[in-house]
Image (tube, rainbow, N blue to C red):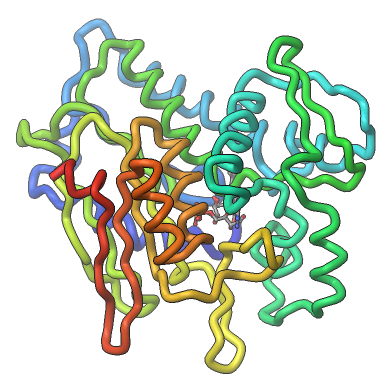
Length: 338
Ligand code: FAD
């Protein structure tokens, strides 16, 4: 388990802003760890037919299976085996991995390549992957060489045959910016199949909210002020029947001198982003889409990201650094929701 966990645990003390959000008010209130980060699930009312402990073990089994499928931190995961393989032949894959790869390619096209799961070798080069952080910037020749191993066009999907193949032997996929969102959706759908209509599912800051909280009100979700020091609430959003994801440059980074290198990589340059966008929150109908879109707009920055959000009707809240703090900028689709 790497550095993320501490930052994530602290963050989620902000999530539950409602006074009701103590364990006693939720018949199912589960917190644990998965995918190197924490998760919390709250169910406001459990149908009588449900055996709570059985539901909890179902959720845990499902999340463990997804970790085993999509982790680059587990050498034996389905994804790690594909990444290690040099084969250019079609390979059978699980339905869930194919679902995530299909959405990843769609968001890659939607954002003109800003979201790109093939940046894995570059993420690792900068120390934001499974290997220990180096706290130093790699040389430009090394970055150039790694860039040559990236490109979504080198990953082909066969949806009918449930197969994938790489056309570049060293292609290496990193699903850290989309798979948690997918896992939230999987747990949400599992709850709904069991007749649960009011719940909050959150994994590593990606959330899906259905119905109401224990106060019979919309869920109140805090957006954090993107400062790496004290944890301060920027804004509280009343939300129901929607998914939310946030990406930022203030938790997972290293600094050399007064230059900050964060874990969001611009696939065009092979370097961490260097603009003034400190964090972005996306509201969407799936958490997988919100998760990937947040990273994409984080890459595009406050100007190009906002233009795309307006053009594609994306509900986005930008928190932008200014001299003495931050300024918020919301897309029209975001403003329409409140
Ligand atoms: P997000 O903004 O959601 O994602 C940023 C991440 O996306 C970066 O860290 C990088 O990996 C990737 N990325 C960067 N730029 C781009 C881009 N342009 N396009 C696409 N992707 C990009 N962490 C651990 O420390 N230990 C673990 O055991 C562990 N297991 C994991 C298992 C799974 C299945 C997954 C999906 C992740 C795992 N992680 C683990 C990573 C951790 O959960 C987070 O995913 C990671 O810290 C980034 O998530 P975030 O929400 O902070 O940032």
